[in-house]
Image 1 (tube, one colour):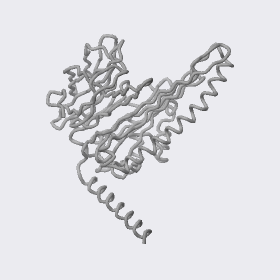
Image 2 (cartoon, rainbow, N blue to C red):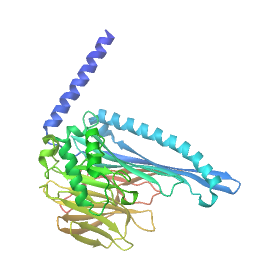
Image 3 (cartoon, rainbow, N blue to C red):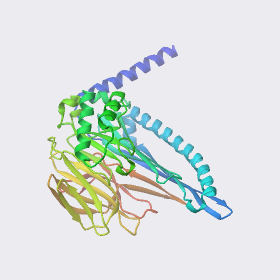
Length: 408
């Protein structure tokens, strides 16, 4: 009897989530919030005949979800937790191995010695009731001339927590390969690609393309040495849904009316600000005096010195578009956020907000560091600015009609 009851319970559970998935697929997607990352810092020291020295340093970031996401999407939560556990185990294995390699390198090459490093990071790209997509970053620094890094996209069904296969989004793998090659050659005209069409076609056929599902399209990532030299860096190709609608399954062409999309501060992000298929390219840079925001052919200097930029593109229901640019004030541990309104050919600075996506908890002798991801402009977690070694206070905010903050 107990076994029968367990089977019935499992069937009911599966039916409930199947129905939820169907309802979710039929409804227009809606942006959700509640994702964050927790960062762990580790430094290992050692001692030899020349004295104490730094052996190894590691920074590990794992994706987390709050209690609301846990309650609404338990299967998604389980998937993310399994991924975190696997990544953490991998990091610890690398830590053990690289500590031994670093000690040997110090003995063999004392003049060139430097600490070995292993870093991971995570960055949300999309979070709504249909799909959750994010990037994982991995860097390994050993005895070589330069370290090796890579970005890897993860795409999950929000309700079931299962991996979203590319063939569920794309209608034609051959047409996709052609579109990617066309985009890469247009965006990187100086890059000396080697066998680009052959490589992309093969990866598309094998299902090994590296991608994220963005609010307005899909982005493919090519790490150093994959299609170009290390010096070319990370290469990306973004194809917007409305640029090539026949290339996409209709389900995934729907976009939330309001959403927020974090992006890498030192790489451009491609979107369609008017949601009409017109490509808009947004990029950032900074100097000691200002942060520069460029949208297509227009660049404006914002006379607020910030570095270590953590930007988010915000699209509102009425079509307004903003950037929230979280940055570190030079010479301090305090972070602030620039609020900037953007159009296809306009950049307008609004205000500097005394807030940061960084949340800190001071626990002697260390500091617990978290970063909240802004993915829903109608409700997100934002911390009042404070020094890194003090507790920061979190507020629940939304973006108001002026582009600044409404509370509660």
